[in-house]
Length: 158
Image 1: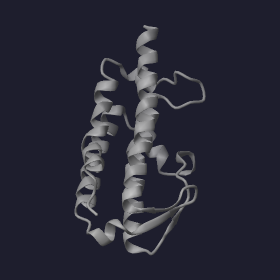
Image 2 (image 1 turned 45 degrees about the vertical axis):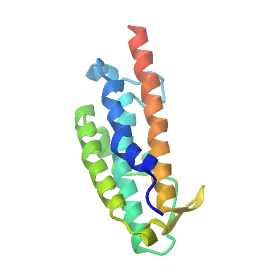
Image 3 (image 1 turned 30 degrees about the vertical axis):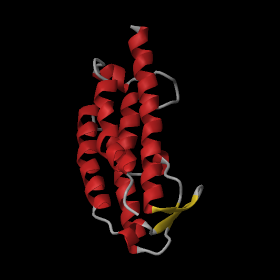
Image 4 (image 1 turned 45 degrees about the horizontal axis):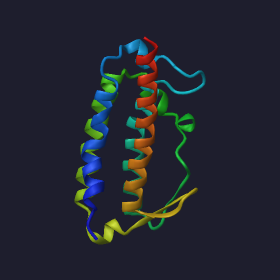
């Protein structure tokens, strides 16, 4: 079992759309909450940047531990998330690019046996490394769609 091309290609390229999605928006538009009590564009980007670090930590634990169990990640329960919220969107996009290189590098070096290792998600059950990679990408895509909607809401309001 090799890593499917669709996973590798999305890991390499999916996040790159963020820059074009928010193109033309100023810092205030990116930082303001369009929907009260919902994250701003920048807060969503901070979440994506932080979650990459969480993903790498989980991946390493799966590789080092038999069937580790992970609770669903909740940013509001993560004491480190506050640090990420203090960064501007340019810094966050740079962090995403750097961390993504680490994710791609680590995943593409795994053996067949390592790709089959599993970790247990509290909501989705046992997931292989490939399942975790797919989950990571779908989670990111969900937030990217949210960012797209927010960005176009802001652009349409002007």
